[in-house]
Image (cartoon, rainbow, N blue to C red; front, side, top):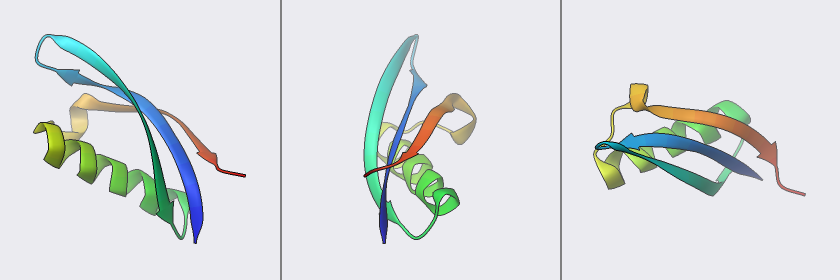
Length: 59
C-alpha cells in the first residue's frame, strides 16, 4: 500500500479550514475517497464543500 498526502480546504460554518492528511491506500482515487469520508464524519461537512487541492505520493 502507498501513502498519499492530500491537502485542501473545506467550508466550516462561515470559515474556511485548510487541511493536510496522510492516508494509506492502493490508489489515488481510494485515497481521495478516504479523505472525503474522514473530513465529512469528523466535521459534519458535505462532500461538495470539500475542495481537494493536491494529491501527492509520499516518498
